[in-house]
Length: 180
Image (tube, helix red, strand yellow):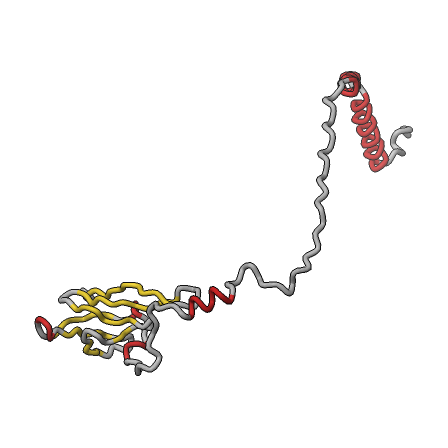
């Protein structure tokens, strides 16, 4: 009987695996002199000095004790009185509202005119597709738009808008003939 016949194939495979691992690991330890040299060179280098940290400025604390005084960002009582007493334009609160004043000007469309000369009236369609006859002096739009002139292709108005200080200012507007 052969003395190697008693060796099992599993043992042979395990032995070959161990030899392969040993060879791979032995290859890792060879030729490391260049790596060691590079590490030594890098350690020997002197780097640029690190700049000092900037000095943190300390700010003087301030206690605000003027809560009982007027807010500097709101208008003074004198300014409010001047704005309220101004002679600028104002909407007439006693005037009855007209049907076209419940719609925004950009939702109203001029669809035509009737008449000629001083008797010219304009046809305006509201968002509900209802046609209204409008004359000079009537109102339309949500910003108190007063019709000042009517021509064959547009309506001229003057709107009253808030100026942000409690007063009102006039703003010109117009509605052109809808080409559709």
